[in-house]
Image (cartoon, rainbow, N blue to C red; front, side):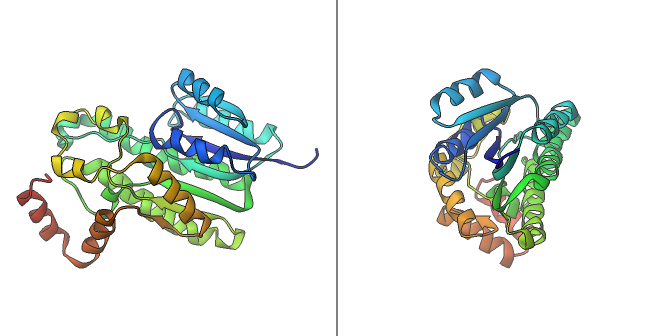
Length: 258
């Protein structure tokens, strides 16, 4: 069989931070090949053409059980080990739970929580010693957010799950890092459903996606279980651990965050 090929696997690779992660990984000498996963195959092909390393495209919806089975088969049939797994596929919808509706609320949970968990479960047996997993959470993980209720709750799940998994995999020398950025300069606002209604205060804290990705990779190298970039995100985390959440929700309402 020969030595195993070392790969990086990125979900949500067609845009935003998933695409941004591919750039530094393309120059990582520990990685032989990059596997790109997302629904928009044409975008993945464009990204693949811009990279120097060889790539494999596994197009499809990560919530689809058939896509998950295909990922499992690809890992079984190829002589590979995963050095870096990045779960960046995700979505958020703005509005009340009632406005967003049953299907969108359920899909957010399926994509942000269930699919991420399934991909980790599939990939962990193929992770290399010293490997790493980066799961995209959000600063929203620290607090409940009315009109982002389901999104914030899913990111709280990602944070909790990632930190627990970090402990579980320590004996295998695998690092799991929850990446918790402020809103980023990506297509996210266009897919919230109400981009024009995103709070101007939230827009002030917009982070540059390339900086978020670079910081997250540095934190994972240092075997940290969480990555925060901006001072405001660090402040939110501290406040969420000190003040009662009902009081914080009252303040959010008064200053126009909700």
